[in-house]
Length: 403
Image (tube, rainbow, N blue to C red; front, side, top):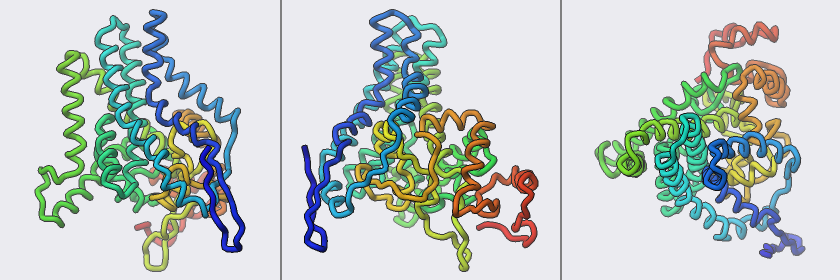
């Protein structure tokens, strides 16, 4: 048992034990769910077992979050430096990188070598994509760190879901523009997840390219060169996916198309629930206020946080992007999701249900105070929402607009 100790300013000694220390291994093994379905298919001969990860993610995970509840405990700030320097935690993020490659390659091999029905083949491709989508979460944790090793590992793991632009777009774009109307990765009140995806996926790629081109121009480097950090990751993607096609045949094209889309869909789902409707205030200088913890929807549900490297403590993450996952804190009085991410995704996939539950929560937040003028609203729904709630749109009455 690892015990962290520190001395307070008043001379008192404190100690801290991370009760979830070994449970963080769940974040390492969770991307291997597709292999579990393959194992049961091999043992039973029943193709339906290939769909087991769907039940694990969208039935078991929300159920466990409901049963286990929330964990609002925080490590004492005095021991956080020691917690951050404990290499065990970062070794877990290193270890999961090759496992993402293993999961995709094994799933592709199984799909191509077994006589699967079309639904089982497509289902396995989708489930492989869901697992690779977790690679974006791994890249998210690694890409926020300063060490060259961790940033290179982020670029490598992001090659699996074919989303190599993510860490550039996320770190230098999303964190700058989060919870503003200009951010393609912040969802708006009244905007369904399906409409959001049409804005977020191409918008994030476009912003990443603009950011990287600007950086290369400042350095005087060519865009089409090894210096382009987006191309570095996509080169690995090309080698990986072309190799799978050459090894397992043309049917891999369909497999990989489904895989890539549903990997991206995992990020879209997370982005959608993380900042829905939240809006930063405009200051007197016309700029948006600095991002605060209350500009993200948070969740302290135990199980889903354990399999996602604490991603759901998103409020603290956006306020302190460099803080490592084991040190992320619960913060009082920030927006709270009704469930962990997997349960929230299910709500989001049914827009009327999502709007019914989340719009009420959104308007009840202290920073919103029931005023739609304090909300990031879908422009196409703005007039109808103000009419429904009987409020006056100050943008219309003043002729102003948000930057």
